[in-house]
Length: 357
Image (tube, rainbow, N blue to C red; front, side, top):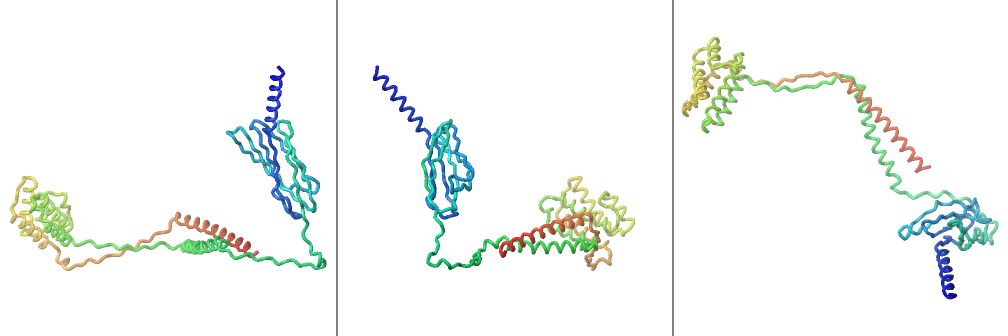
């Protein structure tokens, strides 16, 4: 019975020890020796269970007498062992202006209302070395050291300088455009229209060169040939032969031309009507004869003064007033370019001041 009680008491003591070891507090300093005015960093580190709550020590402006606190960083928290453990780090930046060996007492952290202490630290502060052999010797103020030339410092300045040139040129162009309120004058070259007989002969030469009647397409051949003649009659005699029947065209021409020229045309129209409406299959010599009839009709009815006429291209001058929309666009462009140039020059001035100040 006594042995069992002893084992229970031993397990209780061991469990209490493990629980006590579940919280660890450590303090480290990055430099044990500094000169007067230099800085050192003290890192306070607490490891504990994730469910526990820690309260770090609160300092005002001094850690101990003679050691001043310059900055206290925000705590850095890390979770370990599948978020079961937690590691919190707190960093203190300290300095001193009196040479001495300072004892830094343990830092106290409260975890679940129970205090844990870190180990004590030491900080040695040295004064500036003095030349004891020449105590009366003083050195004047050193001149300002010139910074070395680095191209990277000039990239922004050079880039803005090159950008300002085209912006300035474009601004000048817009100002000239808006001051020049003259109308826009454009000249359009108009190609002349061929005389009726020349246009008809070109079309007939095309039909002749294709020789589609030799491919068994007589209907298409006569349709193109009569359309060329109808277009010629429309342009030459001034009535719309394209919308008239063959007989109506012949009757109209009889009123204004000789019967000999029209007789050849009448034979052509008759053959064409037979091919298109009666499925007539003309012979080879008949196709050639109708082509010649079309050429003879054109040559016999063309105007004599157009024989050697070479039409010249004409030039038309178009005068347009500047629209209100164009003026508004020019004004907006001038405003934006002016603002961009002002900003560019300000930036260049600031860069030059920073480089040479």
